Length: 506
Image (tube, rainbow, N blue to C red):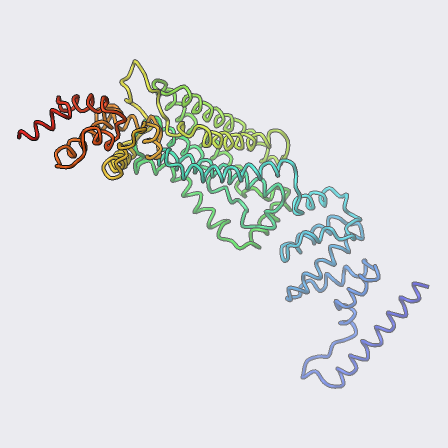
């Protein structure tokens, strides 16, 4: 009965088409040959008709004959129908080939959820295609996403923390940032959202040669307390060359072009989220990491004395995590080059990068003083403050701020003034504040405060005013007359009363 109905529909369609052609022939075609019945037999309408009644064997050749159409929408339609028809005919290889052709024109991965693909859904290549382009979430991807967010937060915290040496905090902040960017890149690749947001393709690759130089320059800065020079910029040359290369080969492309690049890699059996020069990139990055890890080792080996225990522990831990990452990255590079994108050695380097980010984040919130490479307060082998994280430029800046606090704000007038209060006002550490006064004024903190107090007391005594000596003592910050007299005599070799009498006699 169903077959009879199909023949009736075909006859009806044929009569209508014949009638339409008759009208066209009679009306003339302006010198062009009128379409023939054979033309209609090969038309897209007939192909769709066969597809709709599930006569896929007849539909496929008709669709193929119409593949050379220039209209984009028609081409998309044909490729989708061909993919579905071949799937219905249980020809997975042909079906997947047409899926790729369709995706390169109009990437809509949800097309793979069409029920007509059920015939080939268990095919290995179809499973791989679906698992690579359809968005998904795993425990690893969620973990990496949150670690990357923490990393970006830590980067911000480091940059705004003025208690850390400026150059040191910029270097370590960028170091954390590129780690976080790489982790986020991995997360996007694993969730397949790299196809949804194609401009994230290789978004962290430009920084592949930055890890080693940043760590080396950071340790050089905090260990030797010397400003970075123009010659240090040579360490960033490989990154500049790589970035320029990526701009012309990846970053400068449109989103659809990037999708096509990834699809081409996937079609070749490769991981779409990796670089087309994967092996070369892995070798160069591993070399860079190894060389700079050795340079950092030399700095640490030559800088064992003077550092506080807390700072030494922090630096050793950072170096240990980095070296562990270098060793595991080499194994990771081998894995991804042979197409293995899961397992312990795939996740191990990313976990170590996450550990680095979290550890630096912990230090930034709990013990930020270690970032400047602070040294121990006492060291019998070296004079006090021979080495510290307080550089010349920062020292001069703090000196100016300290002078302003005492001359303009008259902070010394506070009778509860202490070193912690001054350090907080300067937005630096207690150690830095103490070192600042020792180096620039050659006196202790208490002597420094008294010098300002006594100087103002002398100015007040020299003026003819109604203040008595005890009022002046309170005015300049002393709690009692005894302390004031003692400090005043130490400075002038006279008591305040004797000094006042001396002024009157003069």
